Length: 82
Image (cartoon, rainbow, N blue to C red):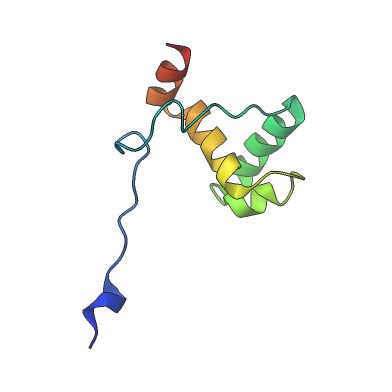
């Protein structure tokens, strides 16, 4: 049996990754309507970014997730303001 098939990739926490920098992760701005929809959808379906992005024209799942991380993780909020 091939061992490579059963290996899982480790998820990288953006706060722990050395590759994340303030220039690479510029803050994403959303309209008030987009923010409201993201918060309501997240409350209903959790972090299913692809489904949330499908409700917001022109937004990609990666943008929605990055926005959520930057507005809800304590470390990012402090870095962004500081």
